[in-house]
Image (tube, rainbow, N blue to C red; front, side):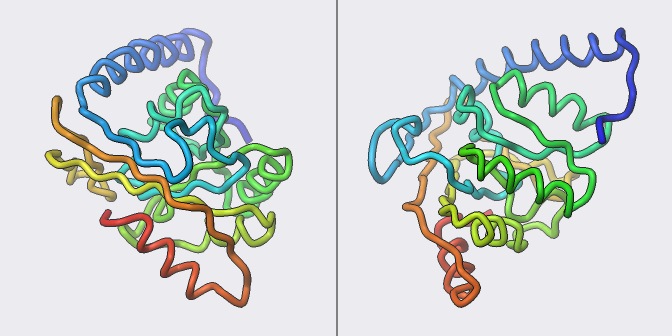
Length: 206
């Protein structure tokens, strides 16, 4: 199921808005003094691919430009706000899957993983509750036998958009921030509690 139908003019407006937003986004992102901690190399592109990446929904501000042009699959919702977000993600080189329902989205994500792609999911998304790990990441890792890797995003100085359900976090310009990627770990039906504990620890505070 596609996004709500839009005229070519409205589609063009959304594309241009996303295009210029991307430029401003990258300028803002460039002011943050970002440190990236990877367990095996200094570049995400050299890390093992075809994994289920996990993060908190509120922590994606730094992640989206960081993972750009790596063809990582992300989910978007079927509404006008996410019509814009979908185009922004695509401009950052991500593959997007609009969320119709959980079953269909899961089938598409499973197919992407089995085709060798990586996916990035917010563990408490798309609508919360905030800070509660839902079973989606673990389930995908189980059925595809792909590893999980969690992003821990920490900003020393930031502000929160508390009108949003996730209290979305945006670092202040010129502040310090760290993105830490965990070692891969695997999920299985007999180790669900251990996987939940490992994910909670690797994700850090939301």
